Structures are given as C-alpha cells and as structure tokens.
Image 1 (tube, rainbow, N blue to C red):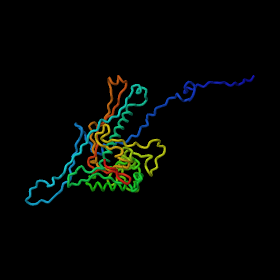
Image 2 (image 1 turned 90 degrees about the vertical axis):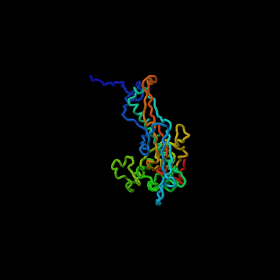
Image 3 (image 1 turned 135 degrees about the vertical axis):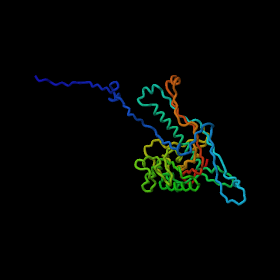
Image 4 (image 1 turned 45 degrees about the horizontal axis):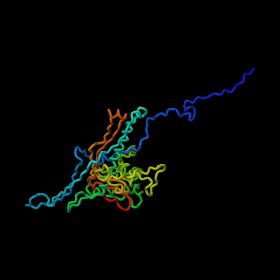
Length: 374
C-alpha cells in the first residue's frame, strides 16, 4: 500500500523578535562602528596670526606705540639736543584679561561602564572645540574693530595712519562678497593701502568665509593666485595655500560675516542657498561689548559689528591676545567622584583680545557705506 504524504505544520523560532512578535531583527546586536559623527570641527587659526602674550601677574598688559619723527639738517654751531617738536610721540594700549571662560560636562560612572565607546575623549575634544571657537571669534572681532579706528597717536601736528575698510564689489547686493573678481580687486587695494601706511609685508594674512575661499580656489587656474610652493593635495587643504598680492589666505567659520558667524544661509541677496539645510541659517553674532557679562574688553554688540562685514586682511601687529591661563582641561577625582559617582570635566581659558595697530587692519565689506567704528 502506497504511503500518503501528510502536511507537517511547524512553528519557527525567531530569536531576533521581542516576545515572539514584531520585527524579526529587533534584538540583534547593533555593532558600534568605532566612529562618531562629530560636530563642525573648526580650525583654530587666530592664535598664530595675532600677537600673543602670556600674562604672568596682574590683570592687564600694556603695549606702547611710538609715532613717527622727522629728520633735519644740522646748522653748524648749534647744539644737538633732540628735535624741537619732541618727537616721537608715544601712546599706550592696554589689553585686559576677560573673566574665566569655561566649558564643562558631568560624566556619570555607570554611563561609562555601559557605554561601548570612549566618552571622555569625545567630550574633552568637544570642550576644546568650544574654547577654540570662542578664542577665534574674539580675536577676529578685535581685528575688525581695529580696522575702523584712528591711530592712538593724537599729538597735534602728527598724522599717523588708522585702519582701512575696503568695499567688495560695486552693487548693494550681499552676493558681491562671493565674487572672485571683486575679492581679488579688494585684495590688491588692501595690499596697496598697507604699503602706503608703512605696514610690514611679513605676516600679512586674510581670513575669509569658506564659500569665499572655495570661490577663489575654483579660479586659481585662470588668475594665477596659487602659491607655487603648494602642490597636489595641498591645493585642496584649505590651509592658506592661496596668495594674493603676498597675502596668505585662510578660511574660518568664526569671522563676522554678513551678521553671522561663517555663513549667511537664507539671508544673502543674490546667492542661492544650498538645499536641505533645515533650520541652519548660521549663528547670529552675539553681544560682546564691555557691558556684557564676563567681558572686560570691547568686542562690540551685534549691531555695532553689523551685517556688512565680509572678510579680514591684516598683519600680525593688528591685534593682540593676552593669555593668563592657557587652554587646559581639569577633571575631578577622589572624594568628589565618590560623592557624585562621576567626574566633572572642565575646560578653561583666561584671555583677552583687542586691536593694537589699526594701520595693520583691513576690513572687507559690502554695500553702499562702511560699517561704523565702535
């Protein structure tokens, strides 16, 4: 007799399901790739571009200006006792240390035990970025302020050069700030102005918005702006590989740019913003005048800095940075860690910035009128 096949009903075990229901892969391990998406890691460049001094004691540091003097022909028989006008005139500039700048985070011990990546190194890195970002912003605002100032030498009969402001383009559109042709023309004007004011050609730099920088990069093949010492991958590095009129160019998200820091999405006339930027429209300039909490120098309010500044060209003497406490990280331990079952990670920095020699500062701007001094 022939054997009859029968249908066998089975119940499949799905070890990836929670309580045998739902997604068949829900309980499978999510492997950590060893990488983390980090925030914008801005290059910190201001520390090497301005005059940095360490304050050993006291609250401020004094810088001395000496004005020009003149030569004269000697009259036989006359005593030589110095010029009759008492030259050179002398003035001072004092930079005060602002209050302690900090960035901190509390790391709970149990979170560290359960975490499969290194919490502390990532947090300390972000704390460092926060301090570096503020450092650059204060330094660049000091340079911008200096470009709008007259010389500190005010003695009657002596004329000393002050700062320079140069318009980019000829329209009232903010889009002029991105025109490579207009930028190149402004650079040569700035170089000529610095030459005319007797500013050293050594250490001249420019700091631009990244989009301005890359606009120039795209034009290097036709305008000869590339630094011939940089080749290959260095052309793409964004670390000052372009020179215009002997001015080395850097990019930064921390310069005052059209009323924002680094970018002006959604608010730039004549410029098409990238798509899918969500609500990101750049970070609005904050108030950082002497009346602001923790500020002992004057970096200007948001309205004083204005919405038309679009780049800086300067020489090292343009601004100074005084550091009483250099960037450092501190971590709690001992009894404190026992009581709170975790550690506070703290980054700190005590510094202050201001303009020094206005003649060494050039501010680029767009629009019909230059931003006002503050």
